Amino acid sequence: MTFAVLFPGQGSQFVGMGADLFEARPDLLGDAADEVLGFSLREVCLEGPEERLTRTEHAQPALFALSYALWEELSKQFPPPAAAAGHSLGEYTALVAAGMLSYRDALSVVAERGRAMAAASDANPSSMAAVIGVDLEAVEAACSVRRSEGGSLWVANINAPGQVVVAGGVSDVEWLEERASDLGLRRVMGLAVAGAFHSPFMQPASDRLSSVFDGVEISDGRFPVYSNVTARPVSSEDLVATLVDQVVSPVRFAETLDNMAAAGIDTFVHVGPGDVTAGLARRTVRGSNVITVSSLDDVEAATEALGSIS
Image (tube, rainbow, N blue to C red; front, side):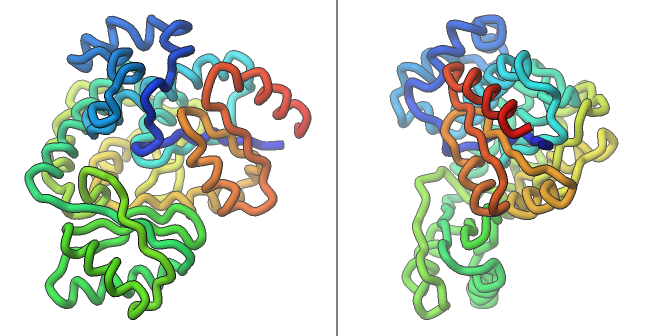
């Protein structure tokens, strides 16, 4: 058995998440984190309201911090993984887990990333939609048609076979929803997100992020971390460039999972709130073992499950 850990991105948040972790790891999630963030992490996560928690500048650091705190507890029981990856924001959690970034540096960068992406969304209204049940080529063709008409629509997340997310202007996403059947798309669902993440709409955020890494120490990883941009392990030399590029580039998560499987990984462990990356692993790598660790209560069961399939 060879396993990789997967960390979730924005969209997995919910009010009340991490109550057990706030009690267990005040060193990671208490006053020191609040000082970096400029708001009470505990209050936002446990009290919300939902509208406040789901704001990009709150959701991103909250999910990063809770997922990493859970990983630290899990890693006391688990051997080191063969590799790690994260969906969008979750890539930062994977990098800290591997030791390529420090927790405090990454928390600061993620906080600024969230603020920059929120500002880009506010400045230019945009949206996203999930396209279900068709292949990537059909979605890319539909986006190309819209751009040929002067619109702004791009593939943003390649999550799993038959699950692609597009990003663009509000009218562009509405156009796709209205024209879905004509374009040969089975189902298009608008997403409740703040903006067109992982598309050219985020260029102001990418520009702003490039200076945030000044003074941040980058180390070689204890295990490979697969980049959303390349779907391959990232080197310490290329790390900053790929993270800056990540906010305007498609998340190639399905390809990442396929490449992990080709490298011999047969077990995937989702670590963090929700279970999104677990579902993507099941859909992408058929027959793989998938374990979900979304709270401290899951740690013992996950440890036993890994032992039983080793």
